Image (cartoon, rainbow, N blue to C red; front, side, top):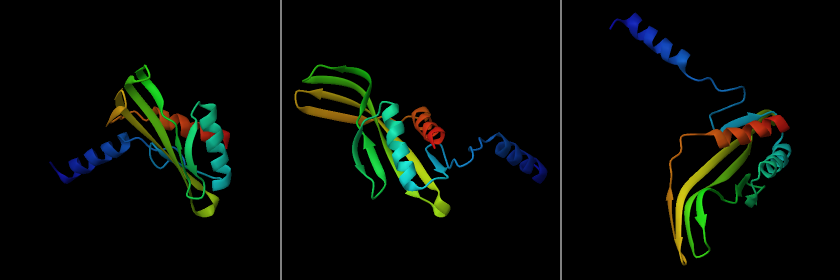
Amino acid sequence: MSRWGILLALALVVAASPVPAAGQVDERTQVFAATPDRVWGVVRSVLGSLGWKVDKEDPAVGWLLTESRRLEGEDYGVYAKGTRHRLRVVVKAQDGGRTAVTVERRVWRSERILWMDTEEDVQVADRAVERQVLDAIGRSL
């Protein structure tokens, strides 16, 4: 293949690649033009409005962890089996009064028999939940 053919192929690949929205670093991170304190309050408000309860948080460091939510399965007290997920949100100050927000979702299968719990992480390519949270934060700012 000639040099021009290779350059044309590379140009086509780059042109077909998805372009992040303004302020979007990747699928799970977005930079907002607001201070970390303002973003922190909006993050907590947005999570609550989307039905996510905060389990743990450290505003000084800039992270919070939601309670897990069931995606599928059943829970009978001493026996439970299903798939769950939870969010970890990281808020980091950037230069120029901007703030980066990263939403990480952990999905896992779990089973509990009496008091013995087992968990197995599930790899998920779909980032719709993360985008939903970031989009809601952007609309609220």
